[in-house]
Image (cartoon, rainbow, N blue to C red):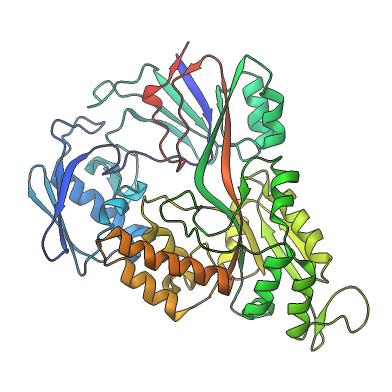
Length: 459
């Protein structure tokens, strides 16, 4: 028996979260972390999982992955067979959260060929069988897994960007699990007892990121005007059919890290017009589009269809901004093309979904997207935006061990995001997956990176 599953992204077993490290401690100077690794674990090729192997795997990842570029790792040591030490240049209390990211996955030495991963040989409940890039990934049961042995022999992950196609594959019996379906598609399954609709709020937010390097969005006032011009409730009601809720702070208020005191932008197009007028934008030729110094307020909004709700959201935003005299061209292109446009700065607004907890600590997302080292690199927050107060808050927050003290700093950081408006937070995600009723034990994951299919059975 096997399971086939539609999936946009996959992740292997990481160092901390699945239990490859049974415990850890940090020295008094907060710079030396000691991880005690699980005994009796084997890689898929039969070689033992040891501190030496983990050291080599991490060092290889550090060379290639930009994920760890802001982590001040000075040295990695294998103290003994099952003891790994990570020495930092400066304190980083959130290090275990970083070590839970996929880039810290334990890979055997035989996985690496001249610095590249030839075949992913790890330690998880399923092991690599075959890969067709951008099409599917096949994994088979690992009978030597240290934890719960899967009940299914094989799992096939299909990479299917279009939600409609994922749904058709489910109906045709080609897959038994279809992930991240849009609300209008899910509605078809609600009264069909041959399927199960699974619903879960996740740690992801939809947002508009602004190109703050030059042009209209270099002006804070213009960005604030956009926030007043967008009716977030309409996006939830008409695109998401009421699934989810409008966003307020970057992190949802239901999260520990969410700033519950932020006053969100109201929908107030008249105020948006007033702000733009005060910034010098008028309709001098009465063509319905604002202009300033001979330049039309004509903008490009880039998004992608892999998240099915984004293109229709872009069209609603286009219509809402038209009402205040802003002309918007929507470019809905595949993810790779959209990212190329984004990272080259060839856009004004970028509409996307951003995961907040790929590492279970706010340090990751805040440094990647809102510290200037990220906004001037390849972050997914504002493009080339810098706020010195923000940089200072984030640098201090990552050195503190007291979470309550850190939260106060992150609350201030979220207030800056609200006030300066380098992004517009739009809505929080509620994912809806549909499974065949033959599937038992499927659990949605709040970060979408671990589905624990070893717990799933197929009747």
